[in-house]
Image (cartoon, rainbow, N blue to C red):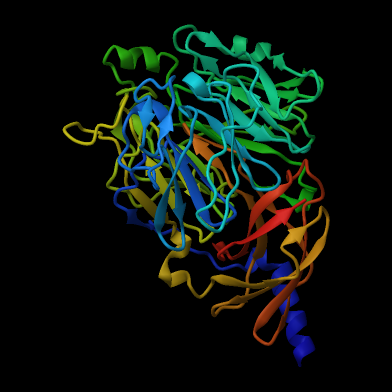
Length: 545
């Protein structure tokens, strides 16, 4: 009899795609989790220690959170406070819902970051004395860890408004940026090889618009052939960064500008073991008309772009497939949810990035289902009551919620007396899959045979489902993003291969295969989710090396 149950469950798993029960998309819900974070979250990322690190810039002047233990930062280059006892970075503990001030020394304004293989956050660039800085934050289980700005490593060029991507060799590539009126039409690496400096990238000059730019914070995605997809303004290339050679140029994406300051957003859709993780498809949504920034500075706040484009960059003859969101959107953040769907959150409907240049906040997130047919992919979700426009951010938490913070369209902290004050509150958005009516589908990971995996390694996973039988089971590996200025860098989701599902003693057992190599999944910490009919479990962290 037990053997028969195992066989039946195997069949359910193997053809679960066709028998999975339809799950209705509900609006989701919002909860205020921190009423005063002290620091506005211009930058945000989730660490493998179940904490969220956030920071803004060091030369805002006073924040609303003092550094602890009487610590102060002395910086003769600071533009606001040479002696500064205020925090400009915080660590949020998810389990305890508590905050801890962190001390960052060099200016992180409009910087970027990636996680190294050991889980260290590598922050690069910024403004003022942070333009060539490389900072490190190693997450910990106590209050002992903090930013390390004292490393001798420096960038070769100033990198303000640049983007990063972790590479298969565990180096970080840093692309683009500027310093005041100087532009960095180039890229470089952390760490560098002997004698290495930076490499010119004419593509960034070609996509540059005088007095507007529209090519800062370029969208970067590591493709399945190891090359780097780079999108700036409305054009894109595939770069072999090892030889500094453009190996493919893609068609222009029509409709307007997509990069800073006309901030659209971009994700790489989930990669799947069913095709050997080879197909790579990019989604870009929102942005602004070419002259949006100029018009906003003249007091004319143009409607944002409503269009999205998808392109399979691994096709022999790729082209953009266009579709529309429910409404225009700029300054949004785009995140891959644990079930492989896409969340578009935060932003505005008019204007552009820059001080005081956004209007008409986009309060309601959009859900995008990549596998639905065109015309049926978007849903409008429950709105927040808090505008999240310029300098807002968001991050996926291991329990499936989305932490949302930031929004400061002002030169300093302005907390009252204006339509869009500096925002210090932190919210959590719970997508529809966390609705109580779906608890019957929700899996719980009971055990892993190993949480430290080598490439191609098979591992055993045990899980339970609250009530219903497991339908359409999938195993998703998610690399957390570093989110700032409408681009969630480094995030990727992989749908792993697995053998037939078995059941014993109320638990499900399955053998899952880790990704095959560091091109498919660069070494580091990932969240592992079991997804049952679109409803994800709470994640377990795994380390891939």
